[in-house]
Image (cartoon, rainbow, N blue to C red; front, side, top):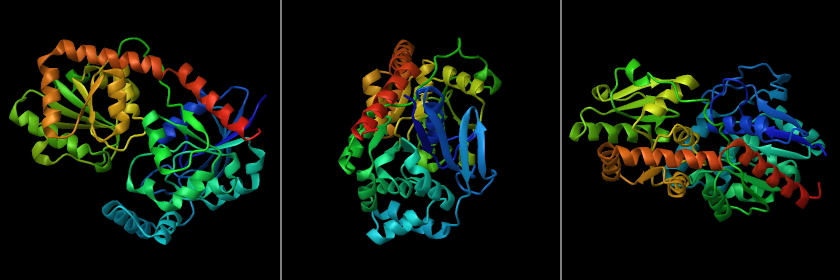
Length: 394
């Protein structure tokens, strides 16, 4: 029996890069039962910093999927920034200030009206990710038909009291990892749901070669993802530059991805900012790296970690990320570091023992193939959706 599903995502479409957006697009294309009918409700924004209405509003079909775009509504960005900054600094806001923060966030009146008016016509509405007005206000219209795919991090925002009621009322949850599910169950009432994750296709043959040579590199560590301090790219730069200065003069750190962060000028002989690269170049960058370095502590899955492992590259991850630490423990494909001393020790171990480095990368590759192939992810997604909808009588 076919069902009507609506994915609600703040941004969506070809060329829009972001973990939540990539996750939603992948599930729609590869995990949804082909008998089901899928629509996406999203905004007209492309840029996640300005949220300017860059795309035309209205209905279109992209890649066989019905897309409904609505303009981002006016909001007080300055007020949002002040409140959010204080939340990050102090760890909490007053309850009314929490509501004000959510009211000043990214939201669309037209999108909300569509959910309220047409929500009963969908068997399920899947909201991605948790910390947007499109999700917070959207799930309150028809909670009995709403599922959260939260991409949840252990951050002050997740602990806001105003989230507990609306999120505790939704019909179900879709998680990326067991660690994310444990966090959600500590913070909210989780009526039903389970772990699904994101899928990756196996590589199409060996990774291309030549990335290092094209940039005049020997051995290098790789940071991949958003080049923003919120992802702690500055920590990767600080630690790598210090290690290179102290004991590894031939090593370099390479930064690939999009974002505003620039390494300090005095470190640019040790740190190379390449910026955005296409998928083919990214594969080559992963494959030739000594290790991926991901110092972020706010991950619900970490696609870059899985992508690096798919190429057989070991990883060094932040111990403060329970999600990535658990990935490494389960796979044997990486090491979690708490501080500079742990980071330096892990890098030196890989430099001194190439056989161990290869074995770690192979263990990561096997883990991704077994846990995050699309067949496994699709099976888990359909099982979770079936269980939630059956519990709700649909």
